[in-house]
Amino acid sequence: QVQLVESGGGLVQAGGSLRLSCAASRNIFSINAMGWYRQAPGKQRELVASITTTSGGRTNYAESAKGRFTIATDNAKNTVYLEMHSLKPEDTAVYYCNAVTGMSGAYIYWGQGTQVTVSS
Image (cartoon, rainbow, N blue to C red; front, side):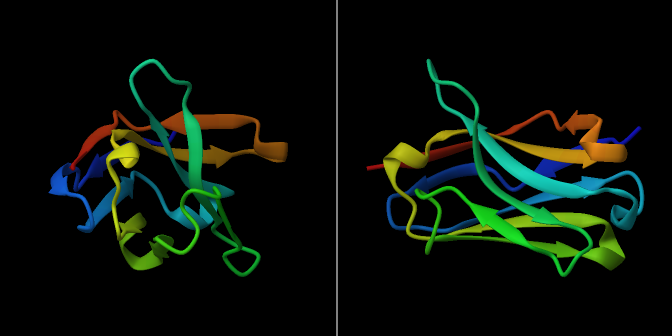
């Protein structure tokens, strides 16, 4: 089991920045990968960025996030961050932290979500 607790959401003006944090309840080296997803009203949940916790910390970004968002881990704090810059109103969504564990990613865990609202 992995409990994930997100923080850092809020209201920001377009062009602003936010940093989201997700603290995991266990050593992240025991987790295959972690990621951030988002879900806007009336839309499906989509991947924003992901990072492997081993294998050199490979990252993957949605096209909409490339160049603006950065995902990173702090292994000592068992925390994954999402740094978001140049925010746009279309980035408004609930952002969810995700952890994948087990053989072939058999287990997936989700945080409770944190709201990000970008005003124009």
